[in-house]
Image (cartoon, rainbow, N blue to C red; front, side):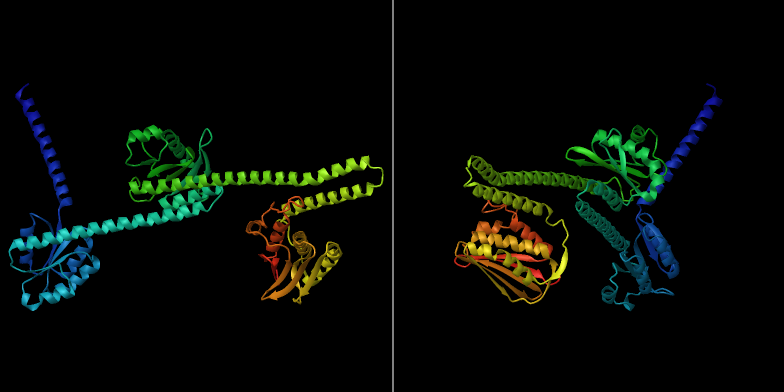
Length: 560
């Protein structure tokens, strides 16, 4: 290698090293400025400013001002960098005390140290009590005193800012948790899967403040979009391939997946078959919703505006909400299973009761038919009457069952009528029959007026309660009916002097299929009574005690 070539290489190397050195110096300077603690010196004496700038420049980044107007402008521009102000008190124009108040309006937490050459003109305690400056220094003091005051002020400022940041972060967390609570409450109100999925899209948007939220069902071979924002339908459709690619990844990993600009390019390329996210997508995340152990649904959100989208708190909020959706789905499944079990149980109990109660009169009918075939004629009418009575009993049971099935579903046929007339007419029909059984029937009509309701259903109520009373009374006995007005209601009291009810009977008397005399009915009469009275917006009470008999007391409103 000749000397010319060698010289050329050396020269190029020197230039390269020089460029590297210059770049390193610029980077170092940039890092230094970034990390430097910035102070502001305000004084109308330029000599003092130059002196202080010289003293502090090795340790701080110094911003200087020689008049109040420029000081306010510079502080407004650099309010996020300046950590402490060294402020002269006595200046031309606005003095230091007025300027202090202006600085505090711009940044209430900025520490200000007064620096004055005339300590005698301003009382230290008066300043401390009224303005609360961070420090008070006499000009010409030992530079170390200046450093100590400024270092303490900067440390105080940093701690204050850190505390404010922590409080702000805490407040954001509290606000987000409130959002989570509100969203969870709304989801918990629904007992329909479709409504839950629709509401979950709204609530994911509410919590994450995202541009798009999509809900996919994953039970089929490929994910099916079931909910989206209709206002952004066209834009959403363009993002579907991106969302579906992420869903495939969630199904593989079985966990939450968040992708943003900081995600390694290799991972983005693997999931989306692309080197980078589209320009209009800042972040995208998918949250699985499990129904038991199976991923039943996946919520995809795009462009969340939550701060630090990939942080633990954000992950927690949205993952917690997806868990709440899962809980709501499980609750629906449990409720539906319970309803089905209860329906099957009720059907089973109903069928068993019907078979049991109808078996008795059918047995009697069959026996009387056999006797009728063998009879010679003298006892035929007796057997025919027995068959007739048992047939009517079956008809009554079927009617009772029919009323039970339709109770509460058919509407009231309202009319205005006198309850005393209805009671009197029905009593006239059964009085002779009761008399044969040696049961007296008394009526005492204290209420004078009409009521508005379903006349036929009120008759049905009377029929059931009087039949119940008739069965309870042993001859000779008495049944009494009293009507009276109590405030804005009509009271109808049906009393019998039979034995008192036990606590068990009184507790269960209005339950369907409960009867203390199962052979005579299905045990639906008093249940039907209660339901009819409820339809009339009334209520019924029972009074029963030893030696006093039992009373059914009905209360009906004057206007229904």
